[in-house]
Amino acid sequence: MKKLGSESRNTGHRQHRNRPADKDPALMRRAQVIDKAALSLGYAGVYSSFLLHTFRSAEKFGLDPRDILIELGRRKVVGGQEDMVVDVALALSKAKAYGLW
Image (cartoon, rainbow, N blue to C red; front, side, top):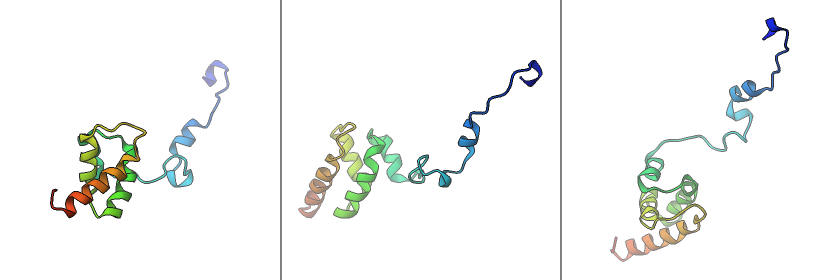
């Protein structure tokens, strides 16, 4: 472009893209981890917005996060129903306590 006489405009796009995520927290709020629970999201057909809620509920009720995700998928939850995670975890913990699960 410089040979044609036009100035190159640098918008900073490349600089922003190459900046480490720890320098700009808006890029990544937490590290991307591919573990058994994250893989279960795809298997169950559940949105990724459910994952953090699932981890919290699993810890609170002493359950495996994968079991909660599979049950959420069985119930065919959709985005915006993250409050169902606690309901499912409570139901699973009761079933576990009564030996039904």
